[in-house]
Length: 241
Image (tube, rainbow, N blue to C red; front, side, top):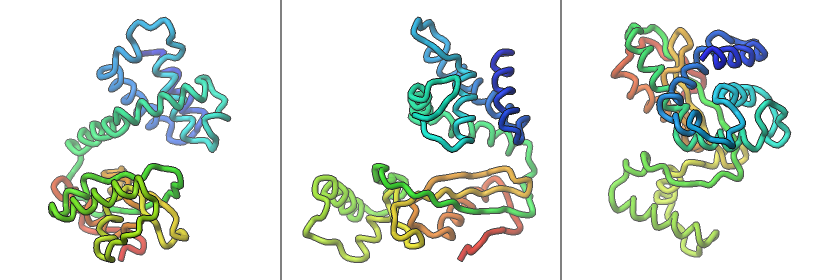
């Protein structure tokens, strides 16, 4: 564990931004993986090249710089780093660690806070596979769900089907997709990251949504879920209408 802390501390120092907080976060990730994915990173494997602390630190460093996996020059090979990033995403490791840390924070945090802040970030995504968001799909009735699933299956085989949907059905179909076309970005395929923080700038809820959805709808959904744990008196947002 001393080696893990040492390597993580060096990388955090190189980034030179809130390295003490970042160091704690990376160690939390290390401890979670050690307890839940022991065989993958600590079991006997003669072909293993990199230690877990090196992988975590390099993934963090990669997220802070502007380059591709192919051009990445670090301790871990770019192709191997990409494979580890896919593994972490597949097992939802970062999200689970975030939820654990947030639960600990909320237990010790005062529920009454003066200000809640919300903002969104739009990311253009051309090549991503546009799949259906099951959480949004479940909000529709059985008839609409069958229509949406049938349309999605058809569009996978035929790009431009002759039969067109009505405006209302087309709106319903587009709303359940994980990627949406945003008018403000020349109708390109986009994702939208929406975050809510408290007055201490601690992220209480961060989620990825369809890029075509309005900020007001996303913010309202997130705040309604947070109301069980936190009571905010004021909401700070930009162009929230």
